[in-house]
Structure formats: structure tokens, C-alpha cells
Amino acid sequence: MAQIPKDPTVDAVLSLRLPPGTDPAIASSLKRGMEELLTIVVALPQFEAQILQRADDIARAFTGLVAPDAPLIEERMRRQKTMREVFARGDWLTAEQVNGLQAMPPANKEQPAGDWKREGRIFSVALEGNEYFAGYQFDAMCQPLPVVRDILAILGPVADSWRIAAWFHFPNGWISGCGEHQGDAVAPRDALDRCREVTEAARHGNKEYVA
Image 1 (cartoon, one colour):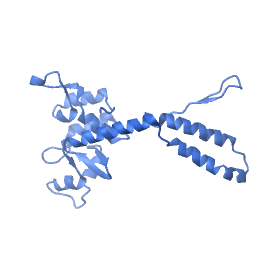
Image 2 (cartoon, rainbow, N blue to C red; image 1 turned 90 degrees about the vertical axis):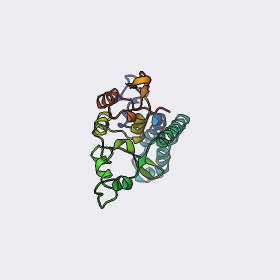
Image 3 (cartoon, rainbow, N blue to C red; image 1 turned 45 degrees about the vertical axis):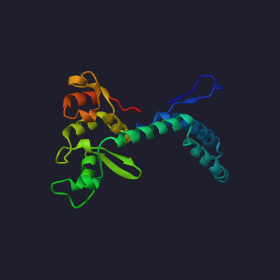
């Protein structure tokens, strides 16, 4: 919504809502780039020849939208650290491996993992150009655990699926250990047999990385 001050000598303020899933770390970079872009666009004359002359200015403004700043670089470094830690623990399967573990494997090696993911029954992550599925999502017959679908539905759409992987991986204060580990936080991935507790933990929401 644009807020126009009563005093015409004061700059107008344009407040924009970022699309859902936009990483907050890029907000400052977006702000600078948009300010530069708007300055150029608003000043454009209406004559075609002069508009074309401003094309390079517009291109530079768009380039500025994605220019990384220090906080963004630090956030990406933390993300890489989290990805390595999450991937190092547990079994990760390719779609072809999931296919091979079926009692009657489909001819298409991407199935049934592709359909299960599209139906929201499992999730995957991308690493170095490859797609992987966390092994803890499946039972002994390599079928999706029903509780995983419930958890994914509660967490809702997430632009970066590594956030989901991190949620499953790191200890969650809403899930408590048993026996001699009573009171210790447990990672959701290690408590998928406790459906009520893990779904309740998902409802409290914890989509942040924990490095």
C-alpha cells in the first residue's frame, strides 16, 4: 500500500509485501535494488528512443536486486553447514533406490517416489544436482509412513525443503526422551512412532535452521 504524506516535499513511501517463502536474508538487497529500479522507471521519458537508451540502467538495477550483502553470505554459509550436518546423519535414497526397494518396482525408475512427493506423502532435498529422500520416511517395506504426510501438511509449503529436513533432524523441545533420557529433547526423525507428539511438535512450528 502506498502511503502519501500530506506534505508534498516529503518522499512518498511504498510498502510492499514479499511473496510467501521469500528468504528474509535477501530483504535488504531487494530494497536497495527496488529503490534504484523505481527511480529509473519513474523518470523514464515517454519517447521510445530515450526509453531504449535507459535499458542498460534498468538492467543494472535488476542486477542490484540479487547483489549479495554480508548478512546474506553469512546466512548461506550457515545453510551449507546445516545441510552437511543433516545429510551426514541417516540414510538418503535416490528415487531409483526407492524404486528398487518396492515389492513390485514400477518400470519408471522415478516412481513411486515422484508420485508420493507430489501427493505430499514424503519430501526430498537437492544436493549437488541430485535429489534425495530421507530413509526415515519409509517403513520396512519402503512405504511412506502415514505420520510423515500429517507432519508435512501441518508444516505447510516451504520454499527450501532443507528447512523441513532440519526440522526432522535437530532435537525438538516439544518431544521428550524416555527412560534415562527423560527430559532430553528428541529429534522428530527419532520419534516417528509417537504420532501424537511429533504432530503436536509440528503444530508449534519450528522452520528455522539450527546449526
